[in-house]
Image (cartoon, rainbow, N blue to C red; front, side):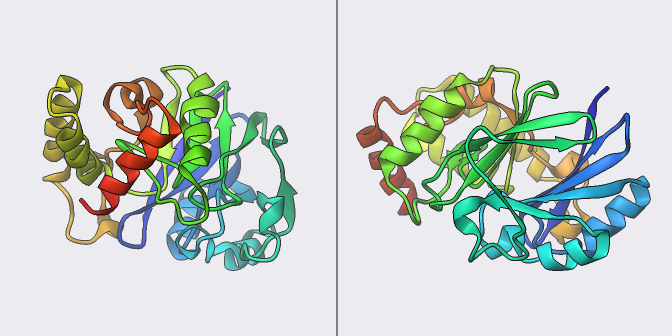
Length: 252
């Protein structure tokens, strides 16, 4: 029994995900701003979409929800506090709730900071974390609605409990720019330099149109072990330290 994960390039640098329980062929969509590529992917895979999952309300992660809900006849899940601002919202989730996709189960982590209603979906058995715009490969999201203390709690307390081999499926292809900042912040970090070189090799193959991206051009997933070695936000010593690094990244 396993969870098959399709990475769908959407907008100019977004990742949308199609998650399929290979035993039942039931599937979930995570963070969809565009309907057409999701529908095409699901139809090509021959799966039945039963859940539409959102990590947060921002349009570039959710504006296709209503169309997908109509097309697949599937409910839309998000944090309970986002009931009035998440497109297509039908089902509210809280910390500790679970979502069943076929025979695969995700537990919900409440990780506000980027937005006040941000959640992550953790498939422990499949070793897959869908963290939206809280944690990126090499970086973290802007603090639009939260504080450094909230982001520190999310990255360095809650996500820190997950194992090194947990795969990180984030919301954007920001890895190269994030690692360039990490190299600036930690110039003596050999792990950062090595990963930045690898990522630049991957991104050199990038298609002009992100919609045409192939696996060879994608830097996601990362792992939490990689993030502990290369991500200056995960490596922050305190909330104040994280806030200082985030302020520096905002003007980098």
